[in-house]
Length: 137
Ligand code: ZN
Image (cartoon, rainbow, N blue to C red; front, side, top):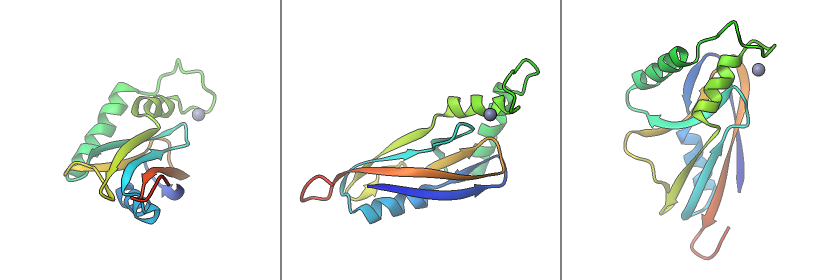
Protein backbone atom coordinates (compact mmCIF):
# COMPACT_ATOMS: atom_id res chain seq x y z
CA UNK A 1 0.00 0.00 0.00
CA UNK A 2 1.18 3.47 -0.87
CA UNK A 3 0.11 6.58 1.01
CA UNK A 4 0.90 10.14 -0.04
CA UNK A 5 1.06 13.07 2.35
CA UNK A 6 1.53 16.75 1.64
CA UNK A 7 3.01 19.47 3.78
CA UNK A 8 3.83 23.15 3.54
CA UNK A 9 7.33 24.05 4.66
CA UNK A 10 7.54 27.79 5.39
CA UNK A 11 11.05 27.59 6.84
CA UNK A 12 14.19 25.50 7.03
CA UNK A 13 13.29 22.98 9.63
CA UNK A 14 12.78 19.37 10.59
CA UNK A 15 9.04 18.62 10.42
CA UNK A 16 7.86 15.73 12.57
CA UNK A 17 5.79 13.37 10.39
CA UNK A 18 5.68 10.42 12.80
CA UNK A 19 1.91 10.79 13.32
CA UNK A 20 1.26 10.56 9.56
CA UNK A 21 3.40 7.43 9.26
CA UNK A 22 1.59 5.85 12.22
CA UNK A 23 -1.71 6.72 10.54
CA UNK A 24 -0.58 5.00 7.32
CA UNK A 25 0.40 1.87 9.27
CA UNK A 26 -3.02 1.85 10.94
CA UNK A 27 -4.87 2.25 7.63
CA UNK A 28 -2.83 -0.53 6.04
CA UNK A 29 -3.78 -3.16 8.57
CA UNK A 30 -0.23 -4.54 8.40
CA UNK A 31 0.81 -6.40 11.53
CA UNK A 32 4.36 -7.40 10.59
CA UNK A 33 6.38 -5.65 7.92
CA UNK A 34 8.17 -2.46 7.01
CA UNK A 35 7.26 1.15 6.32
CA UNK A 36 9.43 2.98 3.80
CA UNK A 37 9.07 6.74 4.21
CA UNK A 38 10.32 8.45 1.08
CA UNK A 39 10.91 12.07 0.12
CA UNK A 40 10.75 12.67 -3.68
CA UNK A 41 12.60 16.01 -3.62
CA UNK A 42 16.21 17.04 -4.26
CA UNK A 43 16.48 19.80 -1.63
CA UNK A 44 14.70 18.00 1.21
CA UNK A 45 15.29 14.74 3.01
CA UNK A 46 14.01 12.28 5.54
CA UNK A 47 15.62 11.20 8.79
CA UNK A 48 14.97 9.68 12.20
CA UNK A 49 16.18 11.50 15.28
CA UNK A 50 15.21 12.70 18.73
CA UNK A 51 11.70 14.09 19.13
CA UNK A 52 11.82 15.02 22.81
CA UNK A 53 14.15 18.03 22.77
CA UNK A 54 13.58 20.44 19.84
CA UNK A 55 17.13 21.73 20.33
CA UNK A 56 18.43 18.53 18.71
CA UNK A 57 16.86 19.43 15.34
CA UNK A 58 18.11 23.01 15.77
CA UNK A 59 21.64 21.71 16.43
CA UNK A 60 21.48 19.43 13.39
CA UNK A 61 20.51 22.36 11.15
CA UNK A 62 23.29 24.46 12.68
CA UNK A 63 25.83 21.70 12.02
CA UNK A 64 24.59 21.17 8.45
CA UNK A 65 24.95 24.93 7.80
CA UNK A 66 28.54 24.80 9.10
CA UNK A 67 29.35 21.65 7.12
CA UNK A 68 27.71 22.73 3.85
CA UNK A 69 27.96 26.53 3.57
CA UNK A 70 26.93 28.29 0.38
CA UNK A 71 30.08 28.83 -1.71
CA UNK A 72 30.80 31.20 -4.60
CA UNK A 73 32.44 28.28 -6.46
CA UNK A 74 29.11 26.46 -6.78
CA UNK A 75 27.95 26.38 -10.40
CA UNK A 76 24.32 25.24 -10.10
CA UNK A 77 22.35 28.15 -11.60
CA UNK A 78 19.41 27.85 -9.24
CA UNK A 79 21.68 28.99 -6.39
CA UNK A 80 20.66 26.33 -3.89
CA UNK A 81 23.56 23.90 -4.07
CA UNK A 82 23.99 23.89 -0.30
CA UNK A 83 20.42 22.60 0.03
CA UNK A 84 21.15 19.87 -2.54
CA UNK A 85 24.26 18.83 -0.57
CA UNK A 86 22.30 18.65 2.69
CA UNK A 87 19.58 16.56 1.02
CA UNK A 88 22.14 14.04 -0.21
CA UNK A 89 23.90 13.93 3.16
CA UNK A 90 20.65 13.30 5.05
CA UNK A 91 19.20 10.90 2.47
CA UNK A 92 15.80 10.67 0.85
CA UNK A 93 14.18 7.91 2.85
CA UNK A 94 14.02 5.87 6.03
CA UNK A 95 12.74 2.38 6.71
CA UNK A 96 11.02 1.47 9.97
CA UNK A 97 10.08 -2.02 11.13
CA UNK A 98 6.40 -2.67 11.86
CA UNK A 99 5.92 -5.19 14.64
CA UNK A 100 2.58 -6.07 16.18
CA UNK A 101 0.92 -3.34 14.10
CA UNK A 102 3.18 -0.66 15.56
CA UNK A 103 6.19 1.25 14.32
CA UNK A 104 9.26 -0.10 16.09
CA UNK A 105 10.68 3.32 16.99
CA UNK A 106 12.80 3.98 20.05
CA UNK A 107 11.35 5.97 22.92
CA UNK A 108 12.96 9.21 21.80
CA UNK A 109 12.81 8.67 18.04
CA UNK A 110 10.66 10.58 15.60
CA UNK A 111 10.51 10.59 11.79
CA UNK A 112 11.38 13.95 10.26
CA UNK A 113 10.85 15.57 6.88
CA UNK A 114 13.88 17.87 6.51
CA UNK A 115 13.35 21.06 4.53
CA UNK A 116 16.51 22.75 3.24
CA UNK A 117 15.11 25.14 0.60
CA UNK A 118 11.90 26.77 1.82
CA UNK A 119 9.23 27.81 1.34
CA UNK A 120 7.81 24.87 -0.59
CA UNK A 121 4.76 22.72 -1.05
CA UNK A 122 6.12 19.24 -0.47
CA UNK A 123 4.98 15.68 -0.38
CA UNK A 124 6.27 12.39 0.89
CA UNK A 125 5.26 8.78 0.47
CA UNK A 126 4.77 5.96 2.93
CA UNK A 127 5.03 2.53 1.32
CA UNK A 128 3.95 -0.32 3.58
CA UNK A 129 4.85 -3.91 2.88
CA UNK A 130 3.97 -6.77 5.16
CA UNK A 131 1.48 -9.22 6.50
CA UNK A 132 -1.82 -8.74 8.26
CA UNK A 133 -1.79 -12.18 9.80
CA UNK A 134 -3.65 -14.00 7.05
CA UNK A 135 -1.20 -13.37 4.21
CA UNK A 136 0.94 -10.90 2.39
CA UNK A 137 -0.71 -7.53 1.63
ZN1 ZN B 1 18.59 23.40 -7.34
